Length: 162
Image (cartoon, helix red, strand yellow):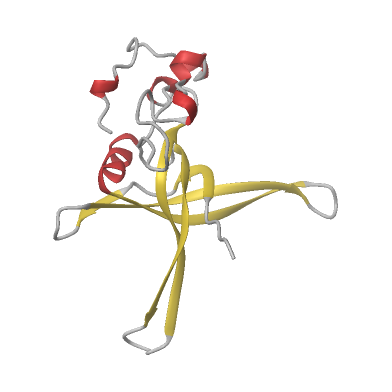
């Protein structure tokens, strides 16, 4: 039977991205993301509920994400679910944690980096040309980004760190 594991999230960072390096030199970037859900309760009143998700990026994508994002900023993340399982050293009980391993990210929101689109490129059959987004999307090119504008002028692909 075929399986499909894809997660798409947009939310605000709950903490500053933490980048550490493995002995082989590969970067590991970890951060928390708060994703809000808005719904009407039984009395017809609007309620908001936050879900907190741990996210991990590996390699250059993680380094770039940490460079451009900070606590409270909005981020758009694409990735897959992973489940870690281990035995607790103190109690001996089985423990587990569900988290997202990020594959790609995008800038979102007006005024964040000038409304510029872009992220870590694509590993899954896409192209690394342009901004690395959906079909080369860039807020600066398509008028996105609201009042933030793009005061830096056109984006040179060779100047991007990813």
